Length: 344
Image 1 (cartoon, rainbow, N blue to C red):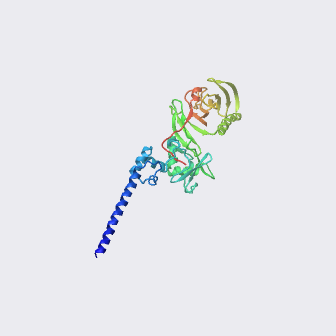
Image 2: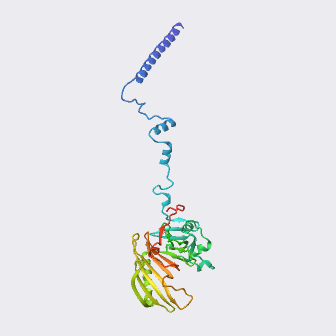
Image 3: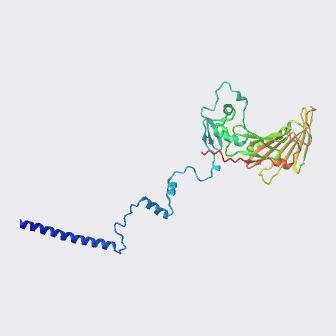
């Protein structure tokens, strides 16, 4: 028993000596590693640390990156930033009753339930246009389908259509009138592919409208007016000037009246096409109650090009003799509206 106890005692003492020696060696290695000046990083230094979230945010902030900027860069944009909202192009869109699509330069409206009204009784068939108090109200109604049932029937049955649908005007190119003093806009008449601006003057009898036409139609209508003169007996033809503008005057007779037409050509520095004017006078009439005048025309037709758009101005019953300045003051300006926007 004594030899066995002595043997175990020696084993314990030996283990303690070995443990003490190993600990001193480990401490020395750790100490040398901590105080080493070697340039080559250790394996532990080459591993990317798994920092806390707060540490990552602080590190990004030092480089000008914030959490908000990361969210903005990774999120899908809600709108295209190329253009401001007020200039977004109106392309195809839909309402609860119809869709509008663009084919080349023409816009078409197609009703969801078909473009033909099968109703047996349709009192609106005798009306072929839809009236609005302003350009803004017309555009808003088309974009949002703010039409009455009768107006929708007019659109279905009276507006021109082809295989692509019912033709309507370009909502990106609408115009408002530029008028001389004493004249104001009195409403808008929409007829599908086109529309007219109704105007009124100070006097109850004064009024008229602006019709938009392309250049070919503009030229053909003006030629048509001149061709009508060949149907009557010309009493007098004179080339002269009217308020400084070159003019051609024709005096002719019809069955009941003696009439005069004055044709003017008015050049303009601000317009690429000269303004052409036809003033119609009644010099004599078989009806004694019929208004006659050699200085104040019964109607005035003004063929104008402005802002790249051709149009005709018809003035009914002016109360004073027109001047070239007054005739040249009729124009148009692009309609600008920041309220209604539909993207393609």
